[in-house]
Length: 142
Length: 452
Image (cartoon, rainbow over all chains, first blue to last red; front, top):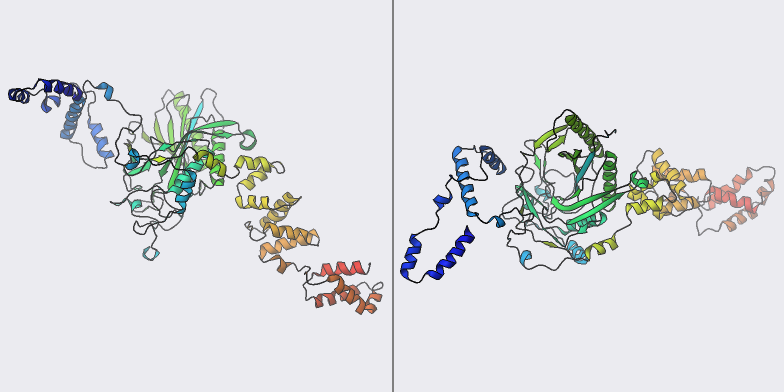
């Protein structure tokens, strides 16, 4: 849906020439959250009481499953599914996690690959730090 | 173990092995075994806010050695992931492991008839680095000393066709990682723990978790094979599930429907591990002699059971290799180890080092006396010179004995009629040398000089 909207918007942008065009565009929405979260349409993944119970357990909570919680999650799933409407090619389970962006230098500026010599040198230089609590304080040990 | 020909046994293993490092995987806390609970824990090990993991290169090094000896391809690019579950044995709420990009892949371990009793190649899917968890003793006590100790998880293909193969593999694996100093302990100390996946006739597989000894693996697999056959014979299907071994039976712990969803995500604090392509070859060059090569060498002159015994007792193997003698098997196994065992003592190479054993063998005295020296040294460890007084280089025995003969001609004359006079001559020599030379040596010299 996003892609479609983007194509549409680009086309529309070219058509906007006057202030009236802008007013017209803004006053005629092409979609709404309400419409997209409507539960009337069939959803592929129905959220049951059991699913919510499992999610709560996995999250380490003890809370009870309320009908409101189940209903709310169903609406959200419905909304998300519609966002992806017509973009089936984009929605597939990744067999790896490489698409997940990490803000870590090594992911973007690759380090020089490690050789055995460097590795052995690094091992020699390992030094526990008191600040990190890595050095045992036997005086305070129970 | 009898197998029902109608039901084909199939099994794969996941072996968790603690690495023999000084420090933990992501912090530099000590890894020593058996310390008081919660004494080897840094702030990171407790999952305190503001702490971050940093890969301990010792663990990476041992993981790479394990990869090499299990013939795996070391990956140029590997990463860490978080495996989420809530349980007090890991305070972060997730375990750091390598799910998507493991350290190495596609290896194998060959079992051979001669040394392992079975010919079979077991393929290894991957080796990953991960953290061990804390140990929960009861509802109130948890020990985080073990939390964060580095592990490798070795995952095999489901290549095992019977339990003998499983047993041989585990034994060989254990010898290999211990011999190469990759792993600190044995299955008995919990340093190696096995999960086994078993199925019959390609039905759903069942995972038996946390098997802690070779005996447990065998018993659990036997039980589970028969349980699955019985279920199928009675028209029931096998449910994919995780089971625990309780010593007698396997019990269901959770079914697939209730399986934990670990929600793996890349760890956002640990950089990618990039390994140079020269690594595998360079590690190979530094590896010591592998167990199979040692067995091949030793069995040229030793029975397999003795060769295996040496292999599994590194201190003794080193002794055996350092000790050079034409009759070394007899001297080490019968005389040396025989005496240690007779006296109910643990073998200790420091008590009689190879060089000392060599000196004992060279002593100028009968075998029975040499045996006594070995015995005495084991019972009251002290230098050989204190136990066996022998020729000192400063004393010229020839001259000493000749002088005594010349001064005591009257005694020498009596020798033919009264042989006990010899004792008197020996006594004089002993007195003059203050006992530094053994009586037998002096006696031998007098007999030689007097042509008795």
